[in-house]
Length: 275
Image (cartoon, rainbow, N blue to C red; front, side, top):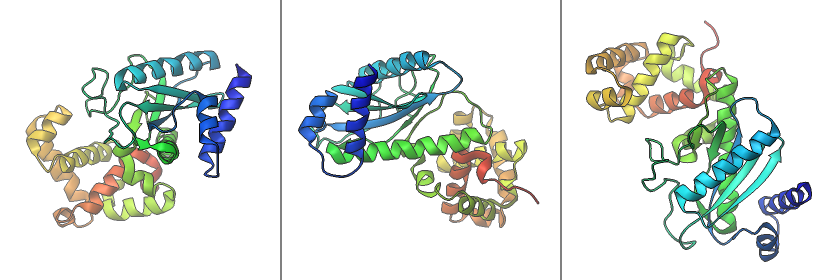
């Protein structure tokens, strides 16, 4: 088994390297169709577990994803003792319009993206679907970026419950997260006092983020957060008052939304560090 795993790892390394590679030979060795539409995922434990338990958990995710997405095939390649990559060959021709959503599967999360199987002990970071060898590589790179973002978030003290995140959910943050000091400067200058690392500010930031995502609808925000409409109005008012220019910062809210999204995915690592 170790020998076969090593062969798979070598072929995948060659495929991801960007250089010339015998695609037909790689597909035969991996028993995986490289001419398909691919969805890549990185999996790692949410809590301590043995490598044997990890193998079983990854296989559960593979079976769950294949069933929910009706995948043609799946490829699992360990990257180390406690992390693995998973590729899914999605149904349909390579030039078809594709989505990481699970087409109404009961396993899908409320957002429509593929959700974790019940009781899964693993975090999962997904790329976007992509066709052919280019899609195989790009989806894996995107999954790796989401993996880095979640590592930063979890390392900053966020709850370690299993997180399943797709690239589309955090794409803007994935593009900016390579320079955390610059992101922190952007967040603190954009959000002002709302960028403080307190529990009260965290609640206000989350409410304002959902409010702006729901096109400033108080009722829609209340439903999304299971709050009373009046509570949403109060929180939004308090959050807005903490912005550097108050309500004027929401006249064109692009920067505020980007800063709130960065804090949501990167956590305390991009918040104000002191007075």
